[in-house]
Length: 96
Image 1 (tube, helix red, strand yellow):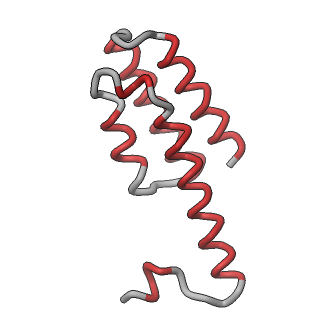
Image 2 (cartoon, rainbow, N blue to C red):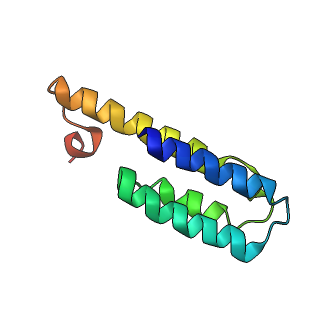
């Protein structure tokens, strides 16, 4: 989880340093690489998809979207693990 957070922060810093206009292909390349790394490190989560898409909107890439998303996913996964440890079913399973 720490590696995923660190990579997200580095990706946001790289994209922020590219400036508001950035280099579209450079930013897109960073986003694709980060998305693949995140899938490998923390697995698929639906929040990663809008974050990936938001990075292609000019100006939004200046926001730390990868960092925020990864922190949220880590928080949600930790909450699910605590619930499983305490014997409660995750919301997705309990609602079915």
